[in-house]
Image (cartoon, rainbow, N blue to C red; front, side):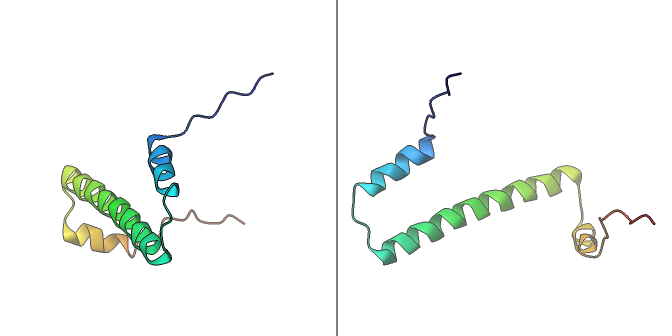
Length: 75
């Protein structure tokens, strides 16, 4: 059985370009923060679209904080 060769994603390829340069620790931390902010903003936009699509109100959202989603344990 022959294993399939792994291909790198476009993100991995782009990050490899950074490895060719010696990035100091401060720049590395800034890059990590930028990547984190990018994905946080993307998740926030997706949640906003979901809320708008479902026509949830701010009260609906606030009530989620108090809902109990776990199933009850059975004896």
